[in-house]
Amino acid sequence: MSASPQRPADRGIDPGRAHAIAALLRGYLESGRAPSHLFTDDVFCDFTFPLGRVQAQGVADVLALRRQGHPAAGSVPRWRVDLTTAGFVLEFEERWQQDGQSWYSREMLRADLRDDAICALSVYCTGDWDERRQAHHRATVQLIRP
Image (cartoon, rainbow, N blue to C red; front, side, top):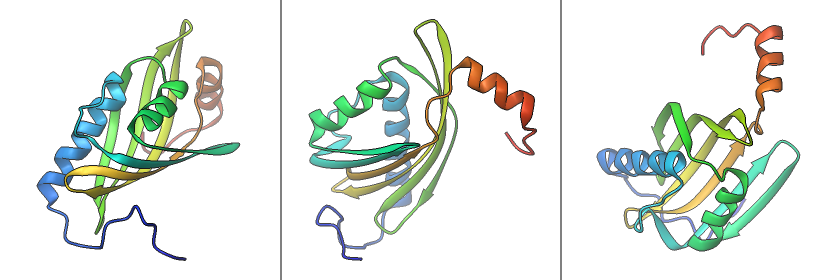
């Protein structure tokens, strides 16, 4: 496997700065409004969902990709950040209202940083669960942890 041209050289990431950028990303996921300095101009996103995979490059296209899948604001009630040599991994749950329903998804992403901004994202999503799917899951599965 070769290194991506988007990936910065492995270097020590300042933990405080990485956590601050992860918090800004969480704010964007909740509000749909990205701070102007959150992403590099050439940011690349590789998004995998249950039955497909799409990619976008550049701030406008990456923001449009997100808006297509999650046009409504919501919340990220659970999240965890783990640092990597190039940025961080963010594991999170999302909840939002759309078309009269409460929706849910669980995702994990890897963010690579360059100059205190996200230059690359690799996102994996369970898919968006509508109320029916959430009810079926609650009725058929007992989770050990939330």
